[in-house]
Amino acid sequence: GAGVSQSPSNKVTEKGKDVELRCDPISGHTALYWYRQSLGQGLEFLIYFQGNSAPDKSGLPSDRFSAERTGGSVSTLTIQRTQQEDSAVYLCASSSRTSGGLADTQYFGPGTRLTVL
Amino acid sequence: AQRVTQPEKLLSVFKGAPVELKCNYSYSGSPELFWYVQYSRQRLQLLLRHISRESIKGFTADLNKGETSFHLKKPFAQEEDSAMYYCALSGRGTGNQFYFGTGTSLTVIP
Image (cartoon, rainbow over all chains, first blue to last red; front, side, top):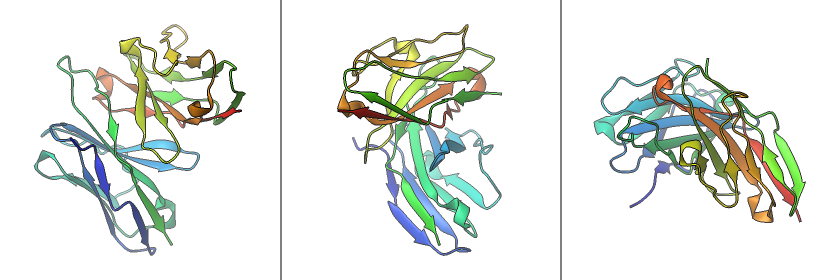
């Protein structure tokens, strides 16, 4: 089947506007992750969803960032009142949990490149 | 606290030379270590994981708990190995969260 998809692939917005980034995980994957990839910063964890459990939001950099996962599938990352420092590539990944509860391979989407002018 | 350190941001080697990308971690429990790779204009993908004990594209990585390291090695680098490499850590104590290093950009010079 299809891999992880993300939309849009590119987003240019003006400072102060809100943006929504979408992630469609691999069907059946219970875990979904959002990361931010900035030049020289590597991958910065943002938020993690696992099944019906409360999401781990410990990586969200400010209250301007929020994410939802509807029906245990599609996820939306929302950034309110965007700032120039929010410019980055936002990556989504999904994985399944192995029978032993171990972390499984993450499958990454192509990312959304966000540019805040 | 969990942490993954990749001390080299940039690494250049000549084709045919051995290559080692360093990764050190900090984790109090039993870690699961991974190497992910991102080739130019491709998405990030798994290269290998320590529990599989496998060699992928000639790369190997051994988990050294004493030195808390998981260095990635290849005896003879190829041009197609040029990419961005990320070391990642997970484990039961992390709640299945992944911690990535800042990445090492490898360039193999022809």
